[in-house]
Length: 593
Image 1 (tube, rainbow, N blue to C red):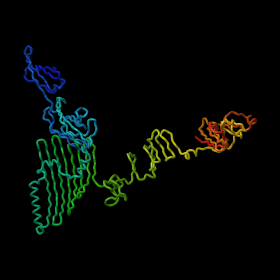
Image 2 (cartoon, helix red, strand yellow):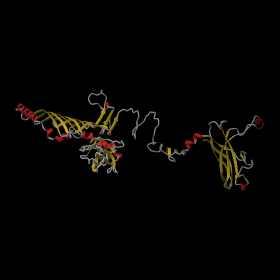
Image 3 (tube, one colour):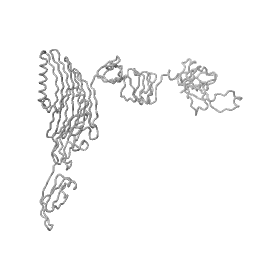
Image 4 (cartoon, helix red, strand yellow):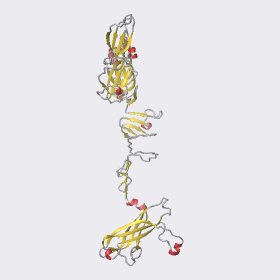
């Protein structure tokens, strides 16, 4: 009989009567059925006699530690991504690897930064755990651990590695530098660079034939060769096939060196953890010291990313374009050239002129239509359905005709900054300002120049000529025309009613109508020989009002005041100092509000 103990604290998981046998197997599947698996087990075994009596138990402890720390760890920068590789552990129950990535050095691995959990030891990493894409220029820190079929516990986590994803420079470097054999070619060394015995013999025979043919001209060498080399290599855990084709022709004399060549290199390689397929084609000519070459590179790597590059080198001036894309990363297309343009399929014979090109990208200052434009994008004519821009700078925006809809702006002003509308103004800050003439604040208050605001709103003004003795000033005896200091025995105040000639509608209180304000000032008269005096003048707008019937005219004549007529009532009161005055003229003004 076998008892299986496990867990912490130690507990009996199962009891098995194995019968008349001396062996027993307890698998990971058995442990899973019992609620495990567990890394440590205790087996207690006892014999049972024919009467069912148990003998003394013997005990055996067994353990299955977690896989050791990963070996051969490597994290390489890729296009907006990282590639992770390690040596596959040899543990028979190895189940996979865990990979954690963070932007912080010294981070603690956990569920919040786990980016991969699976069986692969070659992993393409393009996003953080929360789905944020990896970006070039940012350093990422990586840790990893292996786990087995018994679970993801007691992990031996690796030390920290770091790498910074590449951006467009992965293509630009290919465009700038020479396109050469893949590094795997270099690993093969002489096996790929050498020409086999048959090719060497062919070359020697060609050279001998040409030397004999040109025997009378020792200063001239003509050479042509065609060499094809195929290699197939197989290692313990990888297989590789390569092919190289070279075609070239040369003409050499004392004064000239003329060369034309074509080279094609192809490579495929596959292993347990990676795969590569690439091809590089180069054509080159040299005449009188001038060399131009064109190279094309195609590569597919690990089923995760691919790259295509075309490069032209004309005497050291390099141009070309490249396209790269990877699983889980944005694709990119780069052009290295002084000018990139789009022209119509028909037009000027030969290279299109600037007049034929509606769209152009220039990387150096370029003269277009007689104007030197800086590096950037040139559009001859553009129709833009929807434009979103942080800043628009234009020399001239005259003759604009557009339905602008809703315009979101901060501040519109003239060149001097004296006239402006500030859409961000608040409180007492100026919202609308026109020099010193108009200043409207954001809170609704403001200042207007008198010549601008008052003149259009003056509805009536005049000079009222009268005297106190004339009887038009109430509160005075007609025989007494002086007002001022009451110690002189005269009134200290008087009141004047001025007819403005303006009549408001009879339904002014319900219908839209004008409202008025008035001002009155003494403009003529006499002051007492003792020096005269000043007082306080108060003007207010009043309306003629009342109730009359048909009998009024027969008894009193023309009604006064006129109903709904606008009058100004002016009251003057002695200021408490001085002697007396005798006013005879009053200037007044009625203003529409």
